[in-house]
Every structure is written in C-alpha cells, then in structure tokens.
Image (cartoon, rainbow, N blue to C red; front, top):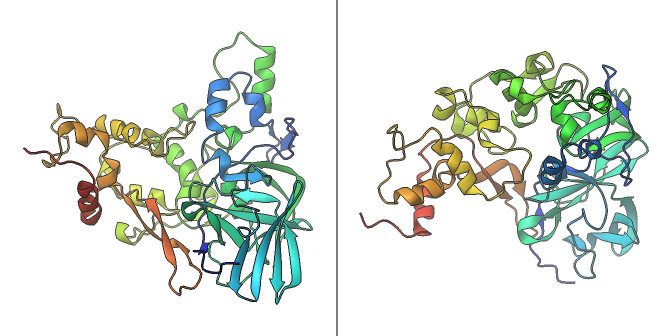
Length: 405
C-alpha cells in the first residue's frame, strides 16, 4: 500500500435522521417534563416542503445511522486503511450492511469495533461512534472531506485510540434526544440503545410535538399552530439563547442534558462564560455567538442568528443570499452601503461575506497530516463582522476583475 497519502486528523459538523431505527416509524419518546416526541416524518404531512428542504441541511445531517450512504469514506481495497506506521494501521471494513474499524499491529488483528453512528454533516468531515455495552465511544478514524480520504479523528494524537467516551453534552448538540439510563459517576455515561432521535431536527427547535399533532388531527380547521414552539414569538434573548446553547463556546451544565428547551433561560441550565474575550482570541469553531456579539452590526441592531440564517434550508456557498440580508441594513439610500471603491456596486452586493466574514483557520479544530508534526487547521467562517480582514480581502480581490473607476 502507498503510505504517502495525505491522511489527516479531521473536523466534523453535521446532522442526521430523527429516527432511532431505519424504519419510517418513530417511537414516541417521553422527556423529563412528560412531553413526547413524534419524529420529523410526522411533521411532513402538514409541512412537506419545509421537511424536504431540511433533510439537506447540515443540522439534519449532523448524526446518522451508519450505512453505505451516510459513511463518506471508501471501503475499496487500497483506499480503506489508515497507517500510523508501516506496522500499525486501522482497516475500515464493510461486510454487507455491517461496518467496522479494525486495528492491526505487525499484521496481527488487535481489536475490531463496529461503526454504529456517523457524526458530522460531511461539509468538512465526519467522525464515527461505536456502542460498547450501553456507552458510546469515538472511533479513531474519521473522514476529511476536502481531501476525500479517511483521517485521524478530531483531537486524537497520532496513535489509535478506541476508548474516548462520548458524553451527553456531545450528543446534546449533535442530536435531538438521547435517553440517559444510568448516572455516569466517574465512568462513561450510559444511554438507551432504543430511545434516541438523531439529527438536529424539527422537535429540537420546536419542542416535542405529540400534543401539537394530536390537537391538529382533531381540529383540522384550526390554522394557528397550537402546543408547539414558534420562534417568531420569542424575544431576542430567547432566540439567541437557543442557538448559543451549541454555538456559544464551552459551557458547564447545571442541569441534566436535554432538559434545556427552546424558550428557556440559558443561564438556568448552563454556567455561561460572561468574560468578554477579545474577538481575535475567539475561535471560528464553536463560539459563533461570542464573535457575533462583539460585532458592530450586532451591537447596533436587534439582529439574531435567524436574521441571516434560514435554518430550514441548506444555504452552503449561497453567498448572494447572505449578502442580500446584509443589504437590508447596508443600503445606498441610507448611506450605509459599502464604500470600497475597487469594486462596482453590483460586485459588492454579490459577496459581502468574503471580505467581512471570511474563512479563517480554527485553532480548536486542527488536522494532523500523516508524516507531519504540525497539525493543519480547518477553515471556517468567522462571525466577528468587521472590515479588518486585510489579508483575506487582498486574496479575494486577486480572484475577481476590479472596477476601473
């Protein structure tokens, strides 16, 4: 085998199906307050377009059952191995509809673990989880999308590790619900193998829907949604708190996982870091709220995450859509339009993002290429909105024709 492939340590982001089985039927799951989930396929009957669009979003794809469609890595011969050294490697195996990672040392099989869940939308990469009894563990090999290859999982050193436990806090941001079965104490946490809902789906944001569905099935003439969370009725803080629960940096939980629901006060459920860190020290991964909250656009308006993001659709690479949302405030009529003279007005309206919210290296998510000692950072869009990204602006200007004015 060629040992010089650019194997890497990978980043992830993603979403998956609400179902706990491959069946289209969703078991009703009861949460701590007694309310019950019904699954996103139930929502489809009344909200078909929204449902279909959401299936393509990174939120929906952030966790999935492992199968030949959800796993992006190749299982073909000569493409299904990751070498730590010539004598130490992990093979990615496929046997019908079963998938696994197997560690070999000096060509002797050491251990093999099943790939049970895919975590990560595949925009940047994926990582994989395995059940060990009723606990979940992260497998050593993930997938790195930009080079289309298997890679060392996020945060792993350059050695095979099979014993990194997955916490409920991880699952809280990469799924809709997991039922915890035992108190973890000092060991790994335990979860039900049947009572979970993958992906950040409808009921993650709108709350458990059984009461809503039951009411409207019996009252078909009622057009206003009852017994369901609607963000249009939320205050600015309520909207921000919900997004911040997973996009607000590290937070220490005060209450059990999955008890925080949309509309709740985040401070009652988490110890939120209130220290104002200079925006330059905030990482582009995981603390988008921290960066946004220090931006002039945020401080001088009532904007929230939903001002710019349409969460029901996949808008990746649709920079014109995002730029149009900038134009709702930054208009020529109000004399708040971009004053940069090297581009035409039309060009400026096409891409605000590349200059004011460019992709920057993440310090938190870095990938170790095989044979190298320095990890390679992943690139993610910053959410500190400013005109200070001079290097990125220069690089962008080199890629497009400039105005002669």
